[in-house]
Amino acid sequence: MTTLPENDGSLDSISIARQPIVDAHKSIVAYELFNRSRSAHEHSTASDLSVALNAVAQSGAPLWNSQHDLFLNTVPQGLRGDHWDFLPTKNTVVKVRHLPG
Image (spheres, rainbow, N blue to C red):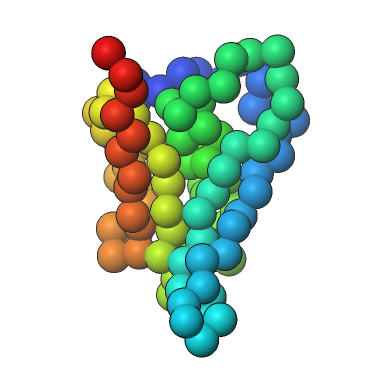
């Protein structure tokens, strides 16, 4: 069971930014995914993670076959659940952001 918000239709029109991360030689070594959707729903790191995971799941071969690392942002609560099971652990870097309070 996943702890992320369910798709309430707000994911039907999403915009994902894929930012390349380069090394000193300007070779791409990784990508970071960001939610750039504009909606009436509140943005949070958890919702950004949900959108990013959906983008990875729907992208098919390009992200699966990539030799580059993939950076995803989440909050501690986003670490629970089975939504991580389909990501390739070798190339996935999870950045956990601590929220104030």
